[in-house]
Length: 396
Image (cartoon, rainbow, N blue to C red; front, side, top):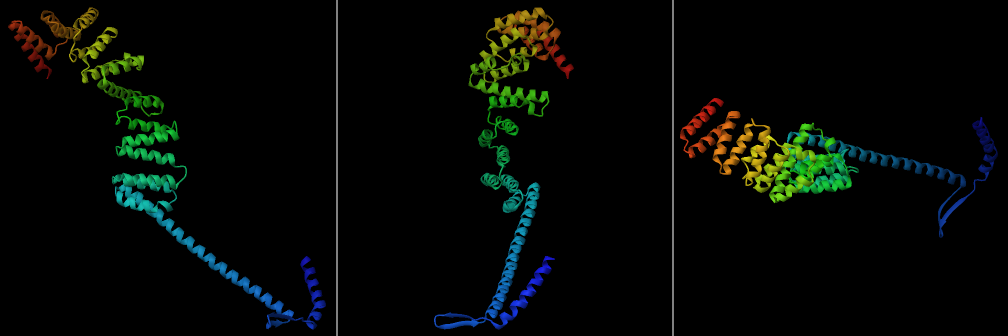
């Protein structure tokens, strides 16, 4: 309805003003200085202005189309480069898995910037560089991975440490891991990586601390964990025993748990450390104390390994135990050695004879025969030589 009213009003205005305009067309003169440049009627000027307006509009439309075509072209080329980069990334990953590290590095490094995940592509390129032994280039790719994508510092840092461990760059790996630890404290993966770094650096005390701290996060059964812990303590005991007997003894007395001090395997580990570094005085004292407090047959084997000087102290301990268990061949064997060291061959012979009745072994047959031979008891000596030989033949 409104449109009809507008059209009717336009027609009425045309009927009213049309004749007036046709009789009075008006006049326009455009001049510059004294020269006439353009002259026409008002009606013609209006018509020219309208035509010029439409020409400008048409020119604008053409230019806009041309510019949009240029952006489309640029977009097409950009998409083409992105697709090519993704294809090269895929080919590079396949080359890396196939062991062609040189080709993988070339493809991955060139395509990284245009891929959807540039950090992952740079990490793969770093692995390819590591396979070629080019650690400088590896670190450069990892730096670019950190810059190329936000929020990937932890992931790239962990990969850096893992690659350094793989390359046996343990000191560098430890430094990088500590920097990560300060930025991301308490991260489980960081703590676990310490367990791969500390042993090659012989930092066994730190290793034990982390191992104990991370116990609940490690996918290990109790026997596996106990084995790792025992081995770590063995290494720590030896490391300290190399420094001094006092150092390892202080660790045992002040920093070891009560359960560990009562564990025979850890006691044997202590004795092994003392013996390896010839700390015989400490080994002897330790052995006597442990046999006195907690008698154990595995500890008796160390009587043969240690240069015992306090024979009488150890003899008293063993004789006391022998009264509780007179049929123990191992105690008789140990007492025989100690009596022999104490220049009491007759007593040594008695213990050896009793020990052979309870627990025969080739070494004791030979030892007893030698003692008897020195005592000019040749018939008895030959008898034990024969018995030892027969025992050896029967045990094969």
